[in-house]
Structures are given as structure tokens and as C-alpha cells.
Amino acid sequence: MAISFDGKLVVAISSRALFDLSDSHKVYEEEGLDAFQEYQTAHEDDILKPGDAFPLVTKLLAINQLEQGRDRVEVILLSRNSSDTGLRVFNSIEHYGLPITRAAFAGGQSPHRYVSAFGAHLFLSTSPDDVRQVLDAGFAAANILSGGPLEQQDDLLRIAFDGDAVLFSDESERVFQSAGLEAFAESEKAAAWQPLSDGPFKPFLEALHQIQKAFPMEQCPIRTALVTARSAPAHERVVRTLRAWGIRLDESLFLGGLPKGPFLRAFGADVFFDDQQGHCESAREHVAAGHVPHGIANAPPADP
Image 1 (cartoon, rainbow, N blue to C red):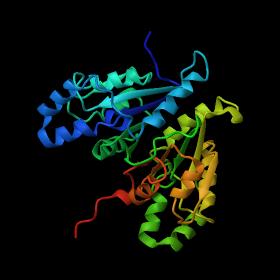
Image 2: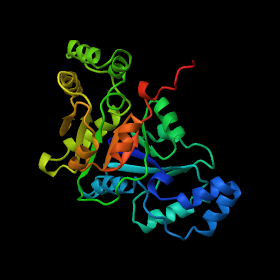
Image 3: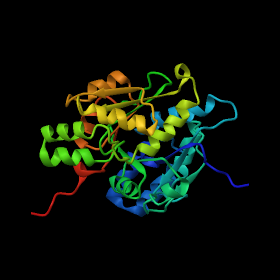
Image 4: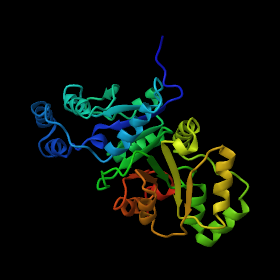
């Protein structure tokens, strides 16, 4: 009988997002592929330090320990390494006791094409190009930025999202970019009862919500938050969109342009997803940040 991931939250992660591979990556950049392969083989018994997404992955996998005989999360390794050079990665996975058993080693090519094959709801990587290809294919993906804190304050998984171009489409952001804040506010007020179109992270949020519904609220292992630059009256369309989707967000912060970092720290986010690089740079001073290079804010500049 074929194994199925139906009903599971499936997260795909690159080896460099899961572990600190800065030493071997430096060898690759300075000395080339052959030297990299030799280095990885020579150091395959050296345990890698945790990477920027390691705390998030450990909390995700810990959810499987809450119900005996019921795994709700699957984490899959997607790597540009070959299986030979990737042995160091799996040795480190075993060292930390991470229940990650499935992987795709793409042998120097981008592993992005395996996101759809595994049915992953989210892909985390340190390669912006791989992330863009996954987003272009219609799946949630983010470039994990280095510098976020690695300590965990408790076992509760807290995930924060920006709204426009992440949970929702960039349709409203396009109005803001082209016509300014006042036109944006007027447009959103007029369309308050018209749900926003889906953004790339809606399926991931839905999968999180399915896990949340399986637990009493006071025992739920996941807490979610919307952290957006929107303010009233542009908040109403967001609220009604989530209501139309039938999705619960535990907290919603409408900041009206205030810096997001201090609020993300107060929420205790394990990761924050935003489409704007500047917001991510600010956020990663306080929490782990994932840049989502999607939508009008990430469009290439027009030719002069």
C-alpha cells in the first residue's frame, strides 16, 4: 500500500537552512565543486551546528509527539548536495535526533522541482533563486535570513505572517505602489466585502489551521499572527477575507506603518514571513525572518 502525506503538514527544507554549512560553502565558492566534495567527505563525521531554521524545524517535529500514533508533520530535506556529500548532513540529523527520513539530493542542481512531487506546503532555503522558482510554481517558499536568534523560549510554535503578497495576493499592494496610501485606503474601504485573492502562503496557513483545529485552544501547539502595516479602515477587508476562508488567526496586529520588529519580539515569533526585504531585515534583529520574493514589491525594475 502506497504511503500518503494526506492530512499532514509537509515542510521541505534545504540543508543550508537546517544547518550551518558556511564552512563548506566557503570552500565551494573559493575553490570549486571538487574541493567542496573532498571537504564534505573529509568532514562527514563532524557534526554541523544548527542553522537559522533549526529551531523552527524542531518545534514542528515536536508536534508529532503530542498524539501517540498520529504524526501531523513531515519534514523533508531538499539539497543541492549529492547523496555522497550529503552524508554529513544526515549524520548531523541523526546526532540531533531529528526524525527526518526523506530527502532529495539533486547533485548540484536546484532541488526546487521536488517540492511539488512531495506535495510540500512550504519550502525554506537560503537560495533566493530556488525560492523564486518554487513561488513561480505556485508553492509557498521563503529565503531564511541569517542573524535571527536561535534560542527557544518555550515549546509553543509561533508563526507570524505579513498579509499582502504573502497570505493574500498583491492586488492591494499594487494600488498602494501606483496611487499612494490615500488611494489604497479608499480602495480597500470600497472593497471591504470583497475577499482578497489567495497569496502563496494561504495553503500553508490552511495546513497549520487543520492542526490547530485538532487540539483544544488551550492545548494547541501552534499560535499564528498577522503582522501587517495596514491600519483602519483597511483592516476590515482582511478580517472578512479570513472569515470567508474559514481560517482562524490567533492574533492580528494592524500597525499602520510602525516597525514590526518589536511587535514580533513581543509575540515571540519563531519565524516571520514578509514579502518586503526591508521589513525582513528589521525583523531579523528580533526573530527569524523569511523573505518571500513575490509580488509587485519584488518585481524587477522596469527598463529605462
